[in-house]
Image 1: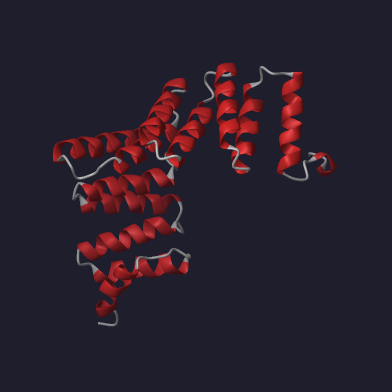
Image 2: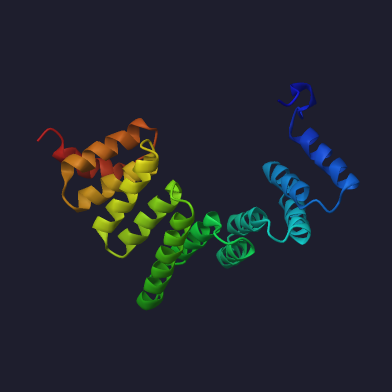
Length: 222
């Protein structure tokens, strides 16, 4: 068990310790990565980006570093950059579920309604990547709910329901899945189930769209 007296008291002390460790061993990719994460927490993004690249230079298979770089791209609105870094994450380590799920998320964000064929291809690629993520991590609840969203975007409501129910089989109190199911069951005109899942989402602290609450209101106590 770690001695609590040796734990850093705050983020600044943690950063100082990691920098000192790098003076002793500048080739440790994990230390560069941990420093980057600490710097992101302090919103020192430019320096964090440098440390993430150093982490990859030292440890080319450190997929988490690619994902963090993707997150920085996403924060700045660079969806293509986010996709590219997550793609590199999956190449750096076979079976890296988070990278596949993040690529899918970006693809769904890139659906803009300008070209129906291109949009459909993006959604289909997203579904393919999400299935890969789930194959590599069967407990990846966010992948199930994102898969459900992708199915909904294709008009495959029943498949979307199934994906969100799979998320709940992993974590029964995952509010996003309950909210998604409320929307789906409303579309299927299964008002009892829609109300049930909507109320659970609210109880779990999820901010349900007021329009959904309004649509369900006439179907309560019928």
